[in-house]
Length: 216
Image 1: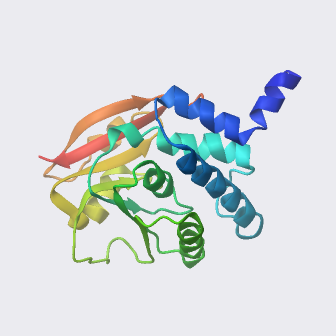
Image 2: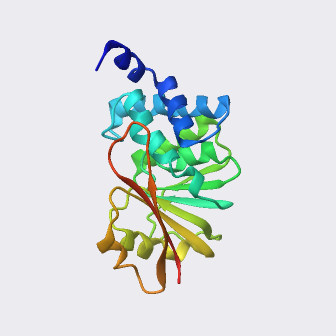
Image 3: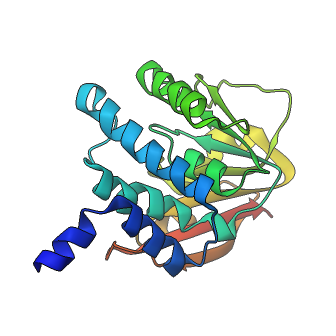
């Protein structure tokens, strides 16, 4: 890598701006500032609590923020649930990119929900709520139009454990690397794949796909 390439890689703001341009996402300056503030907050907490294996603001921008924002043009709904939100992915980037979407960040790990509450407070995300419960046993009053997960390994299991939370016409969105054909063949009865979307994530050479699942 040349000195110029190294300098560009060490510039989280420029990295984010270029990535958003490649993704075709038009986010205003306040939203971009929140994304960078979130990257900085995560990097700070990571030094003590080891929330994610990706370290440094630059790596967080490409490995987390842009990876999650790549799905933003493909997901809709007034209410969304991020199952197994962990350090806030994809829920917090989606909450920033879609301020009109009410997003619930669900995780049973107290350390992670403490971080999520701090992030939501510091970033002023009025459209994000943190819940510290297990998805299997959580019973909210309202169901969700969109249920998304980046953390759960198996698509069928994702649908099984959270289907009681899906609105009648809702959609599951599973973030994946390579297309998990075997998982998609094992979806619970009554569910089918609506669409498989290949994603190009700026700064990442690995394959990325978004799997949309609906009731059949």
